[in-house]
Image (tube, rainbow, N blue to C red):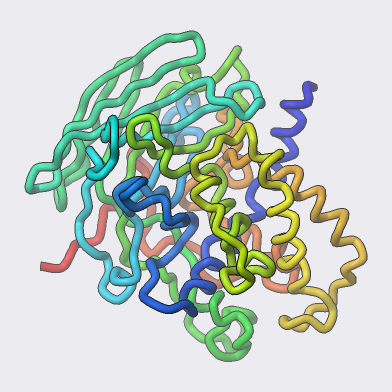
Amino acid sequence: MTAGRLDRRRTLVLAALVAAIGAAVLTAFLIHQAGPPPARAADHLDAPGLTPPPGGDGIGTDLTDIYAFQSPADASKTVLIMNVNGLTTADLANPPGPNRPFGTKVPLVHGDPNVSYNFRVDTNGDAVQDVNVQIRFGKPRADGVQQMRVKILGPDGEDIAFAGRTTGFGQPAVVNDGPRGIEAFAGRRDDPFFFNLIGFLNILDIGGKSFVGCGGPNSHPETDTFKGQNVSSIVLQLPSKLLEGGGDSNIGVWATTNVGTTQIDRMGRPAINTVFIPNNPFPPDRVVDGKPSKKTTFNHGQPSTDVANWTSEVVDTLQTTFSLNDAGGALGGTDDPSDDAAKINALAGVLLPDILTVDVSNPAGFLNGRKPSDDVIDAELGLVTEGFVTTDCVGSNDVAFPSTFPYLAAPHPTHP
């Protein structure tokens, strides 16, 4: 087995470590800062470079979550999902917030102002793009309908392109049929992320708002912070052969938003930037510690340089998260930290590069890729807290996921 393949299989086992804390910890930090910060989920509004100038159009170019999994309808196909236009603080108070279109052109940007949404695919384990699936949108009509164009550039130079349209606000889902059995959807959907954010923010308030101990005889009702929220989703179902190199079903996927040739945001696994890249909630990387933000630098970077550029940041954050369960710690942990250094170094070696790995021949979900229904929080809380917390008692989305394309629930109606 080559080094690249070995690294990807190691990553597959531990790829989701960060997901458990990534959905909430940055929010815990920002909620206590001055001003009304936007809400964060898996990767919501994670860098100042997302707003113009010099970057994107705010939440329209902000990636919230990405998913990659074998199609439940056809084992020879893969489903790719990218979500943008996530919730803001105002939406928390009055969900689901306004209807929002996809980005088209960004003002105040020099050169090419056109916005593109991209699924980047690595087929050989070197953390470099071999396949690119690009989606662009036209100017929205009053009902939210936008023309869309999908372009796939494969590893052998094959170029596939087709046009379609988005689903208008409040309209039934429009499925666009492309060549080679490709299906494409774009439009507003229910936010598929589910998590008790408030319980996490108050995790030390055991017996009160904390979700620690939930599910017991004296437990209190738990709530999904993202209940009733919407996102803008791009969903593609396409033959896996278009994403594979040399017939190998193991691929790596990440998403980017771009304005012209400038990369605005990127995401592979949930919350790598949110949790590990300064400024983040953990000393010595907080704003109050005087460390400058490096989040825009991370978003503008490439996975192929992640190990060299960001391993030290991952290590110093893991040192703090691992200490949460130390004997005598804030959570009343009992862990002996003598083996933490070895664990931290091992995890840092597999958390980077920031790529979501998936064997598209395998129908299993998380840790193999990610499906919308995967409870990534419960899957990883035990790892993050070394067994101290194992559930937030939110085990599913607020509405059921459909079993047919586009696999995401219809959006919640907006207020008149």
